[in-house]
Picture 1 (cartoon, rainbow, N blue to C red):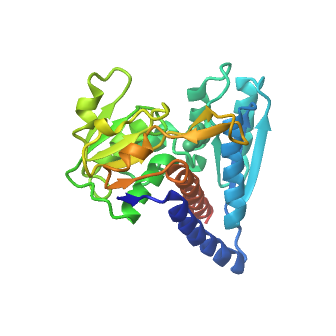
Picture 2 (cartoon, rainbow, N blue to C red):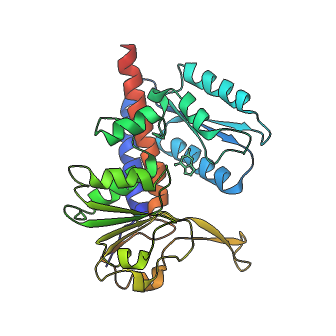
Length: 295
Ligand code: GUN
């Protein structure tokens, strides 16, 4: 069994990006600038955005964190997005999800300039991805592809089962794994809350990508020998014995499933760090596009 070490690979990617930024600096060029907007005080969202900002510092990017109160109106958020769209200094930005109930998420994502949409959530970019056109691929699916590629995990002709159909992970992953090329060329089954007999489906899978958010959902008896297991779950489970009062728990019963798997991602240290590294990659791409558009 091989552990797909997202922590290590993400550090390698950050080193590669830092080397590019160092070259830009040496040439007197502007470095990439990422902004992140967070609305409200959700603990997990604040942690994720904090990690994204720290990652920018680590590679030498500029970063701006925009914090808005939980009572922010949709119009106020749209005004802030307009400002970021027009700000020439910012190459790309993200709106951390989920947003409070008074805000229509789709309206907000549609307002982001597609050329600055480093999350790849705008319908124009999502459509380009589905049509194999060059674009920003959402960071978590992009990170999973990168892990599969760097560990040379075979996907061609394999049966990939995806658990969860979110717009951020499951849906784009189902498109990307079925694309021509590597990683891709998989036969994809997308399962969700209305799927019947899920064990019958997962037990036939060569590759399982679980993005459900239910701790320890995937048990050893649901998995065939030598399956590849990608765990996207990051649920905070209360645990008084831990200093933070919780432990981050994946969708996969790692202790038992890892004994059957050929490759598996741990939680934490698997997909999570890859998401951040790929957001940085997308920001680098946004900066290059921005410069080309200006020249
Ligand atoms: N919330 C959970 N995952 C993500 C992500 O990848 N991007 C944004 N903006 N919000 C998220």
